[in-house]
Picture (cartoon, rainbow, N blue to C red):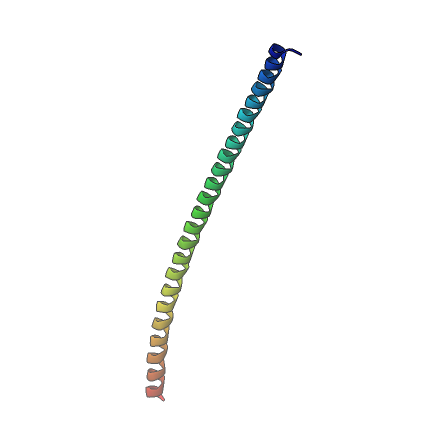
Length: 89
């Protein structure tokens, strides 16, 4: 092999290495982009789930508050009925 053939082989190896490196970098970057998009979608779903949980909790709190008011009103009525019954006796 003379110097010219050796230079051609070295050039071919260099081009092959360059192309392999470029393809590898592209694959890694595409993978990172896909993972980032998946993570973003997952975080968005977690946010929606958390908001839904907060809304449900607030709804339950309102229902319990209303039930407490009704219970207090019933206790007042029961108390006044007991007083009336004690007066009647």
